[in-house]
Image 1 (cartoon, rainbow, N blue to C red):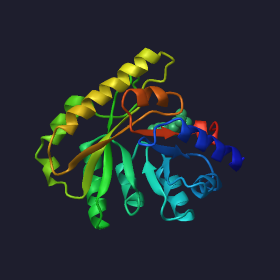
Image 2 (tube, protein in one colour):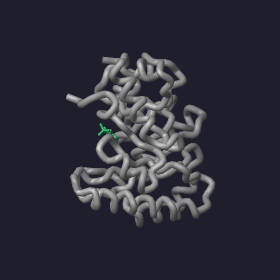
Image 3 (cartoon, rainbow, N blue to C red):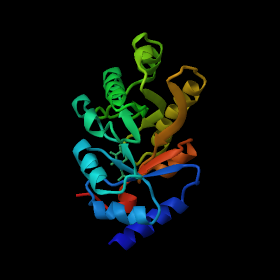
Length: 222
Ligand SMILES: *Cc1c(COP(=O)(O)O)cnc(C)c1O
């Protein structure tokens, strides 16, 4: 079982450019699966539930870089603030302000990605471009001191229409390029997190430099 997982991990790694960061999405999978990947040298893991993330972090080596990739509720930020490496799903100013507050308590700065809504499905979270630009130029944004905006994250529509997926990723890349030209002390735009098991090759072709891959490594989830 764990041998297969490590073989999958290495196969996925070999299929992406080394400059693209691979997040192994271990949600619903046991810590033993993560430990096998860690022993094979992998350090970046993604989870989408706070409790599961905190539990696994407590059981596993401290140099693992934990990525919170799911929808994050404000009242749960405190449980991951002491250790989380990158929060991918920031979808409101209020969430960002809470992350800032908890990071300050921990005397650290937490790196965040703004989640952008790119799919044509109404179940997904995220900002649109105008909302991001508004927030970045707002007075409240300047009050933040312990967060860093490191880039953008998006999820394409769950469809077999490759052209559509490509267009959605391309739209996110264009916004990413635009933000890279903005200067603000809280902005350090260098991560474009897009691409999952089914669409990561397309995402990389459209400019992704961070992919979040679960089932292609750990197998199907229940
Ligand atoms: C589950 C999840 C993934 C990984 O999905 P796979 O299709 O299993 O690769 C990536 N990103 C987010 C936000 C997820 O929730």
